[in-house]
Length: 84
Image (cartoon, rainbow, N blue to C red; front, side, top):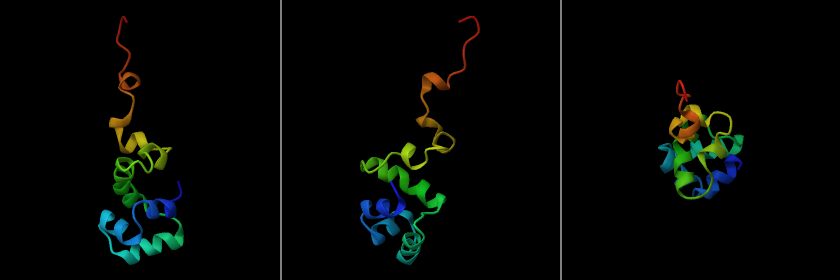
């Protein structure tokens, strides 16, 4: 999902500004650039996921595990046990 579509799916400029704790002109700037800054996207991603818009893994496909390690598969995250 591109960032402009995400802003619209979250309710538009003003709603996204409230969710990101910024002023609406900042969100308008993001729309002009076509990109939400990573620190704000990290804040918006759980909201988008809770609303069924996009998952955190979809929004951060390359580094979601570093941002949200709790999303990693616990079976794969456990180190192999000696003698197992």
